Length: 98
Image 1 (cartoon, one colour):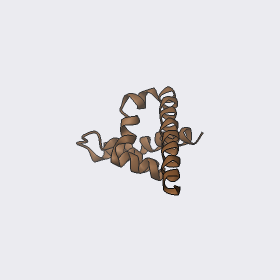
Image 2: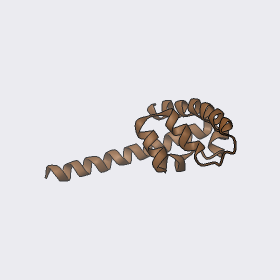
Image 3: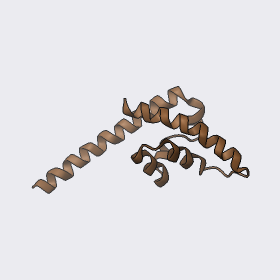
Image 4: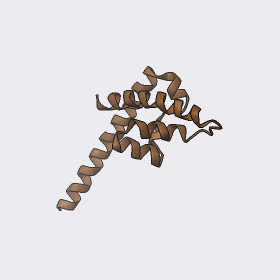
C-alpha cells in the first residue's frame, strides 16, 4: 500500500510541477516576448539537455541548451548569446520559484 501511495503522491507532485512550469513559461513569455519568440520556451525545457538544466536550476546549462538549437558559424557569437541567455535563464528560474 505504501508503494501505491508513493506513486499517487508522485503523480500529484508531477502535475503540480507541470502546472508550475506552464505558469512560469506564460509569465516569462509576458516579460520576455523576444526570448520566447526565439524558442526559449516549453519545448526547450522538454528537451533532455533543457530538462537537466531545469532540474539542476542551472542558468548556464539552460542557456547552452537554448543555443544548441541553432547552428553557429562563429563560436564567439554563441558565447555572447550564452552570456545573454544566462541572465534571461536566471529570470526564468526566479519566475519559476515564485
